[in-house]
Length: 208
Image (cartoon, rainbow, N blue to C red):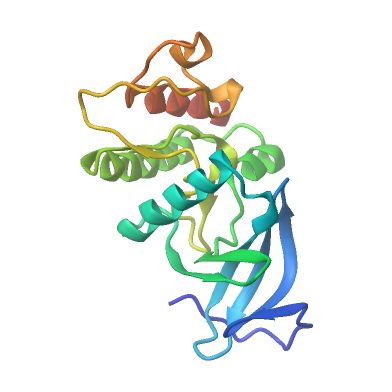
């Protein structure tokens, strides 16, 4: 369990049994807060999503992400502890990764030593193997979605574009981040789970 004995901090808001401290990231329809469970003292990341902006595909993606994360338990996949909802917001209570994401590591330290990059890649491969064993494809692998725990364990996060897909199936939805997309996706062609492997290669190139 991830707990802490940090000095008392200013509480910005409360959600259920969680105190929310500082906002650590914002997006077009969601923000991420660092929080703590008042009973267990576990530090968590709380993703606050504005319900009014959840329409059509965004609602579908969120529901899919929640269902997928609730079905997965693996050291290299970010854990979803629970989901809470109010009149205005949906809250995903997630594993907190104080090490930040790989894009921050690359920005701060530049190219990584080969043994370090190899370690990140091995952990990413373990997580992806677990996903494929459950017929899942992520579809948005990039350094920003690979987070690090306090002891350097890599966690795959952000499953908004992830989908269940059988080995023989093909997808055709254009989604992901262009710099990490496989060529067949950019060409509006059908693709399978190997599209994730192209993204892995792009991430490795950036690491080195």
